[in-house]
Length: 357
Image (tube, rainbow, N blue to C red; front, side, top):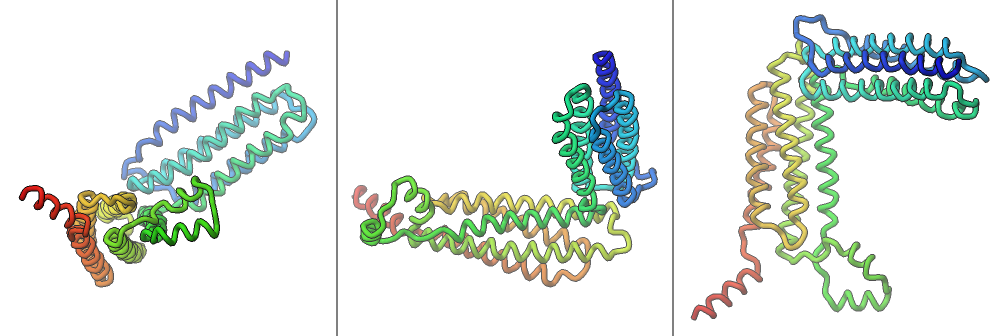
C-alpha cells in the first residue's frame, strides 16, 4: 500500500512540475504592451502566499506520521499558488527592458527552484522515519521564505533596475582601483637583503606579497596616472547615477525611448568597466604599452558616446559633462606617459645605433 501511494505522489509531482515548466517557457517572452501591467506589489503579495504555503508544508511534517492524501492535497494547493505567482510575475514585465526582465527572472527563479526542492523532498520523504524530515523540511521551507522575502528587494521599474546595474559596475571599478593602489615601486636590493636578515620569511610568502611591488619609476608613473583615470571614471559613474535617479521624477520613467537610451548607457558603462579591469591587469610588469593605449582610446570613445546619449535625453548635465572632460584629460595624460620612452628603451636604441655603426 505504501509503495503504491508513493508512486501516485511521484506522478502527481511530475504533472505539477511539467505544468510549471510550461509556464516558465511563457515567462521567457515579455508580454505584449497591450496587456494590462501587473503591479510588482501584487507579485510580492502572492509571493507572501507562497511563503505561507511553504510554512504549512513544514507544519504538516512536524507530526509523527504524514498521510499521502495530506501531502497530495497540500502539493496541489502549493503548485496552484505558485502558478498564480508566475502569471502575475509575467504580467509585471509589460514594458520591461532587458535589465529589469533579468532582475525579475532571477527573483522568480529563486522562488521556483526553492519550491521545487521543497516539494520533491516532501514526496521523497514519504514513508521515512521521523528523524529524516525533522531537519530537511524546515530548512527547505525556510529557503522558500527567503526567496519570497527577497522579492521586496527586486526593482519594480526599468530606471531603478538600470540604476542598480550601473552602481554594481561602479562597485567593481572600486575593487580594481583598490588593487591598483597596492602597486608599489621596486625597492633597493640592499634594503631587501637587510630586511631579510632582520625578519626571515619563506620564499612562497615572499613571492605572493611582492607581487606588483617591482615597478620601475617609469612604470610607477603610468600606474599612478591609471589610478587617476579610474578615479575620474568613478566620478563620471557617480554623476551618471545621479542623473538616472533624477529621471525617476519624470512623468513616464518607463517610456520605451527612455528605457532604450538607459540600456545603451548601461552597456557603455559595462564596456568601460571591462576596459578598466583589463587596464588593471596591464599595469603589472612588464606593462603592456600597446594594450594600455588601446584601452585609453576605447575608454575615451565610450565617454564621448555616454555624453552624447545623455544629451539626447535633455536635463541638467553640467556636472556630468565636467566629469567626462576631467576623465578625458586624465586619459590623455596616461596616453602621453606610455608614449614617453623609458631609460631602458633609450639604452636599447643607443646599442642598436652602435651596432649599426
